Length: 621
Image (cartoon, rainbow, N blue to C red; front, side, top):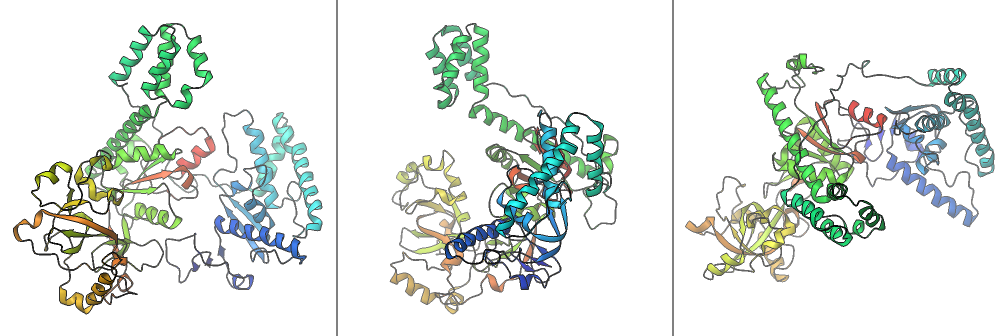
């Protein structure tokens, strides 16, 4: 088995990194494997290269039949299986990926999908569009009448292929679509016969998965008193003054684009009665970002309370049963057998709006530890695979740096240098050394700086830069840092929360003298430095004032290609660290194809109008 972007499965390590820079194997190399797995991203790349080569062929006058072909197109496959195959029929104008997949030569073709037809069931043309999608799937399946047989890549036969495609669509419309839409029995019978020939369906009952229990959560959100006063006062005093209403809406947070629209002005002028204008002001406020923030907070509060309640009840039932236990794990399908459900609580928070998901997540993070939450919101495939594995298995995999003790997540790529950030600071006596960001007690503000009696060094930090957060939050994000900032740190050498530092003799053996030579040569502005023993501050070590010089990852401070001769991450074995991960933040755009059958609770932040999509989302858990 060959997995594109990873290699031979016998030597591959998971999770996968589909965004690999590895080149595509030749057709001769691919032919040595029984099974080849290829992601859609590779199909897009191969199609782009094919189009580029075709343009070059036209310019150079070379052979169009072979020079532009991908290795995937130069083989005749025994079977092609397209996961999430409904995308082949989703768009009337076929995408480049769809066209490329249709051009692959094979003896047999399969489409795997939980939703062969997609769309809004309430739409009046839902059935017609669904029938069109099915016909486009038959096109890929090479149905003898309602699909299209492939005549090769030669452009000379392109017209014939397009003609066959139109004939297949016309036959489908005449035999199936039009009679079915007109409720003629022959259309239903023909459709059933075709689906019976080409489709194998497995339902949830067939694979013995628990049925979901749907609950409509309701929360009460009170309009802030200041907003109520603004609305009531405006209705009572503004009369027919349109400008006064627009000013009130601006104070309520209505967007500027909406305020200047002629549609809103006409709506204000038409609604003359006080009650109508009250409703108008209220409805405009309900569409503002400030109100959405209240909604997000209440949604997060509802989720947090539900999760805490479910985890508490599970503990009362004796706790969860590990996956490798011989004891039965029965899903709760009704209130009568909740006591039988001993699966670990695994919660997915799902949203079709990226901004809403992040806003709700902000409030959830306030109630749980960061290690309790996994995110599939954005980023590279390898990082998302790592997060999904962390959520499912409740452990993280990586390496611990021997220098600083920093944890480095393993996402399928080779770990070379430690990625933990370290700070270079300088005290009032001019001594320069490295510290971990967690040693920063707080940034020194203007008031403390003025009262320090020349003890503070550097430049005081303005709280505005921290967005109103306390100065003790300075260490949380490097986005808050600036060179020259005045800091108060804990310089205790033997600290229980930090890894014990190597001695000067040990550092000398690893090349610290050479490090200092390079640092002095660059006037201490370069990348070199080492995490040596801290200065001895005796009793005052818990509160030392320093100035921030620079910061970078541990691996760059300790550059093996420059001076460092000690052990690196490459010399450290991978290890697993248990974590209590029970919440997954899931963006709808990144949810396709995920196996979430182990999930016990799914929270939808917005209603899903597409019934097929709703079924697919809920069937994942």
